[in-house]
Length: 292
Image (tube, rainbow, N blue to C red; front, side, top):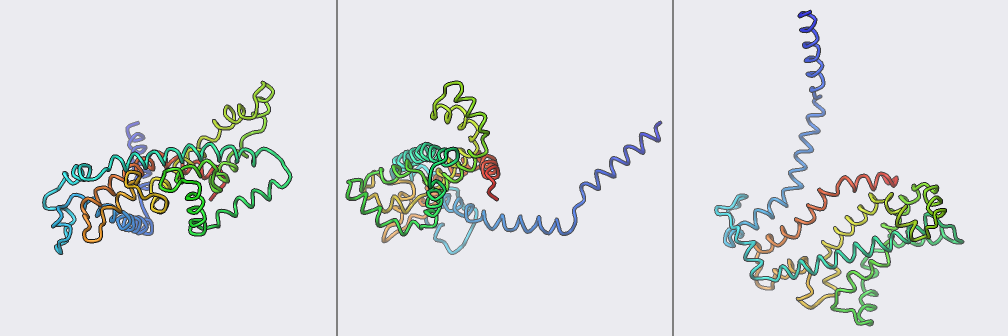
């Protein structure tokens, strides 16, 4: 009996060691991934390091990754000397409105394309998708002229109102997801007396939450990090976003690199938080639509 138990334990240990073995190719691949990961994250770490340095140490030829004296007060001083809270509020307001606008408009349009038949629907959908091939540089000047003529120049409205008219990628993503919602669920809701909007809200929306999360996260990243849009439409410093605030630290005669890097770190923290919270939803939402 004891011999049998010993044999079982040795067999289990042998299987364990076999499972833990790695081939040389796997080891090399792992080391390469670690190397490239360090290369990709190095600029972020250098930005963090620069934000904690004194001004004379930033421009020193003696390059050091870890500062001699960590200047935590750089973050406090950038809030004291610049209207960072105003930048954050403007950026947060624009981002929130864009997310709400895209979720509302894109869901309605995608539901129409996915569940209703109409003459020329496919042609309209192809026209919609073709707008994805038009670069921002082509529409930049016409949009600027339109918004200036209607009196929206130097206001926040050009930065969030267009989101209430949807965008092609989000509509396509939601349409593919909505097409997978069983039609029987909608028919059951209609038999219970639900109208179109009630069916959409109570039946369709709960089944497309992963796709809605993806749209919200993509919209957050794009709007939060947008620099060109605010640069074109805004001139009032009180309306500046975080990206314009970072650029404002670079003057004609001086660049306060330690403050600029500190503000950049502050700007990137919400993006990291949103990414780590929503990364599973991003993968789930995209893979379930059939996009590879």
